[in-house]
Length: 407
Ligand SMILES: [Zn+2]
Image 1: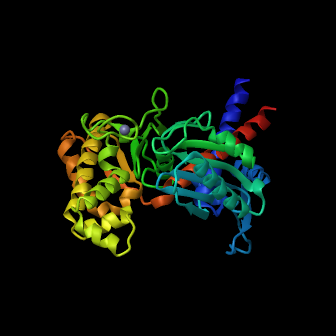
Image 2: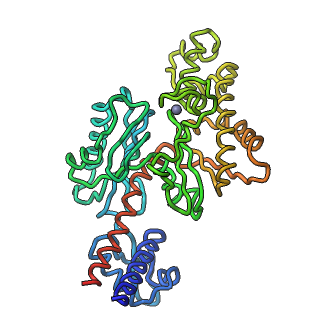
Image 3: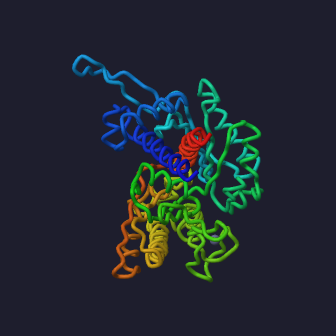
């Protein structure tokens, strides 16, 4: 019995190693796979045949001929398996269809307009339908991943509470979408999805202990420790936007006072800009709006770049509080890396250097604190949501294999 378990375990490891190698380097020859993985020629051939029969990989003829013969190349099938990822955020909704090589095949985006339950569910449903319709056979879609803000129960697939969404508490979103589309759905906190994207394809590859901070209409954090998401006792870890910066500060959407979000979120920057303009303190912004620009973060940033002192001071405040809060994180965790992402990073030229100064100034003097900016832009969370399913597919590859051997 022990022998069988050991054998299964080794075969599973070999299967995963082979699949991951093909996913990463394909199209690739068996000889090259042998060099990367150290697997025997026989193992590669046997496992490859199984993966071909499951339509996870394909064999293609090389265009190059070597000494009178044409070597075969193995690659991940680009036509048989797709995953949908949806990012639900107050600043808008983004959905992507990706293949197993994590390439975006199609992307759709919707504005949030009114953030209430029926509106949000209808937009999610509409976007998923559009992506499903773009594939010739819906059975090729292996799963739908959802990146959600606020409190979630990832295991039950329930959105517990989202501060900015109306009428959106205890929504069994996994069940709702599975009933509608008949495709497995999984949900995850949005910064965790963005962290997953960085870990799989971005700045945090080979980094086991890091934080991803999403600076958008709200502020969220993913904590990755030992290569795994740290969720805390009941899943509430990473509520970085709601650490108290000032107990006498403004009321926050969470009901508390003086949270980081009330100083540094995109929503706060927009609200303060609107208030300043009403008081006649933001002349450059006022001129831009009189010329037809809408009051968006892009317009506010334009005013700051146009030397609107009041608007500049709003960004300066955000930089100060963010710098202090990040320094606190560095002092507690001293992580290998902190990655910043989200809508606010589109305007990093206005606040990032000041924020970095405050981190330097406030953190423990010996604590190294590498801080990088994500390069994935607005699709990072949607891609990460879809990646939740690539892991599931890998697990299935292994478990199917183990069952067969155990029979
Ligand atoms: Zn709060």
